[in-house]
Length: 186
Image (cartoon, rainbow, N blue to C red; front, side, top):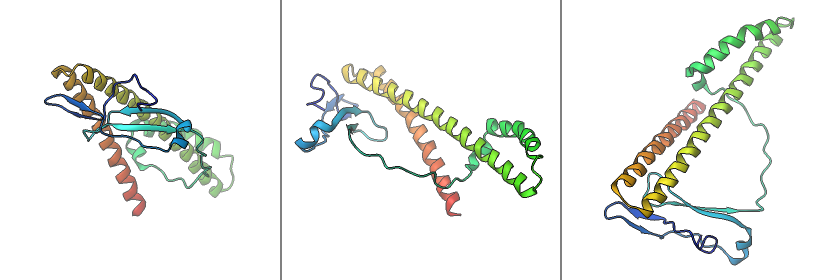
């Protein structure tokens, strides 16, 4: 970070009382890789007194992935908006499927539409969660920078407030992931 951002004052470790800030953590890389470093940053992290160090390296080839296997995210059945949207669309899908003479074809048509609905709805929810997380993370970073420059009680309280919101968001995500793993095991 120092070689890429020599004017930036940012710290990887801090203590609340008394307010102390240090750069304790580093990424050490070969000189051969320095040209591939696109950006570096120190990002405040939750559940630790150390900040995360981001190191973005270019020219990494992305793997091409296939569509994989789809499973219904059953938590959508607890989401009022998802259920309401499903209830509104089901009569339309029923009507469109009546053209199919085969009952199996009709059933596949209904399942197809439910799947497309679930995928679209899940993607929208994930996008919304990611946007909220980014906004909160940005607020946390700004508040941390302000606190590093002015370690007052008010600034510390703001950092702790935002950190608590981020921790709740991560805990919620961990619970969702746990339940998804449990349902796939069963």
